[in-house]
Amino acid sequence: MASDPIVNRIRIIPRPDGFLDRNVGSSGEVFYDKQANTLRLYDGKLAGGYTLLTSGNLSQQLSASGVAVLEKTVTVGVDTVASQGSGVFYIDGVEKPQLNLVRGYTYVFDQSDATNENYASLYHPLMFSTVENGELAGGGHYNTGVVYLLDDDPVTMAKYVSGFQAATTRKVLLTVKTSTPNSLFYWCHFHLNQGNSITVADPGTGSGSGGGGGSASVEVSDTVPATPTSGNIWFNSSSGRLYVYAGDTDSNQWVQPTVPVFPTFKTVAIKDSDSATIVASSVADTLTFEQGTGIDLQINSATNTLTITSASSSSVGNFSFASSIIDTDDSSSIIITPSVTVSSDLTVENDLVVNNTLSAKQFINTSIGAPILDSASTLSFVAPDGVLIRGELKLENNNITGVGTINNEPTPFIMGVLDGSTNAWSGGGVSGIVDNAVGDHTLTFTSNLGTTVDDFQVLATVQDKTAGHSCVISKPAVNQIRVNVDNLSGTGVDSKVFLVIYKTA
Image 1 (tube, rainbow, N blue to C red):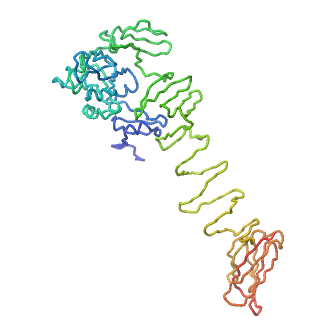
Image 2: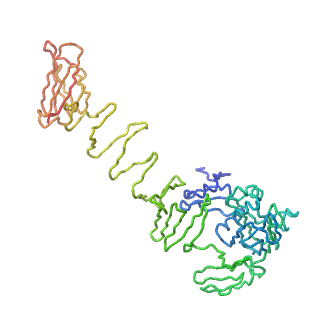
Image 3: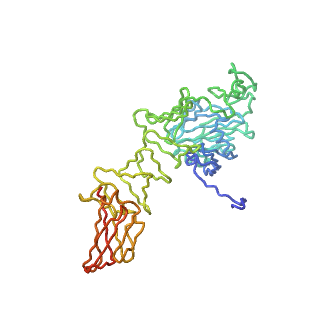
């Protein structure tokens, strides 16, 4: 694919929309939303990314954005007219009203109220039909432009009925199209006479109060028109926004049919996955989210800060990140104040730089290879109870500086074995060995052993396996030791000599 980018198929990873809603993603990532049957595009900044608009999800996206959308709250209550035991639908608190809907609008019938799930020990899925009482009266279901949502996921009509009681949120979306019949009915899937008729009209025809009848006059002003009627259009010359005056059975309001810019904060109610109400309110430039007596989130647009506080105690409680990566837009530093406690293992992939003191109860290396402690200057180990080394202590140059003792005796400065037969030294730190004669060698060290030859002393042990050898040590210079080995006859012999050098000053 590197040389020829043209392929006959591409597989895009499917994910549930709950996973996609939580993640920010990387710039350019594409996922398939397998519940909404559409694509999600990410720019690396916006959580949930951008949903690709298709004919299959148009109604749902219009509902989410609030463009030309009217919401209707559906409940089930007592039948005050015919005393029907199964009850009747109430729309926005009105007992089974006749509805007047306008083409071009999407209507959201929200059945999340508990009475829909259980009234008179029955449940009541709302449906549409061209025949009163629909399937119960020999008619069918009208599903053109209808979307069924359970817990905000689109489902089939059959699954909307079967999963109705188990869901937390239940909504039926009806997008009134040009092809929508002038007359419809809303009804209960299981019970007769719970609903009523629906009249469908074009905007501004004056044929109803359900969302846009009346005069189609257009008024341009910087103030709200004094006596509007359903279907009036008002262009706000101050903000540049367009509104349509829409009415239903119990209220009238200006509806904005275009996507607005982010407005000044207003109090709103949001329900999370646990159906706990979260209230968002604003004071000046600060938006505060509250959930009972739990965690408060404050977003201050003036200072670009997010503050997490507690409503009832000094603790902010717990919160988690859905994504595994925390980053900044420009990859600049992330500063956390005050200290941070990590309750599990901390893995650092690159260099760890500590500007001040690094404290730890235990350092453990379990990986392959040897860890290295490197310093541009002196590396100090300070421990009141001493430094404990378990295992072999190896010194690359066999040099121990400073004053110290082992079992109350001075610590050796250099140790090693001189092999006279091979003219070799095992202790390191030697720049040269001169073979003066049989049994006589001079070692020259890379650094001085003392300021004067009296500042260091040498102990020597001849390691030949034959008996009766003697060893004489002399110090020609501060960086030299001469070693002479004789046998019992006073004749020089080449043998192995173990040397230990101590500093005495």
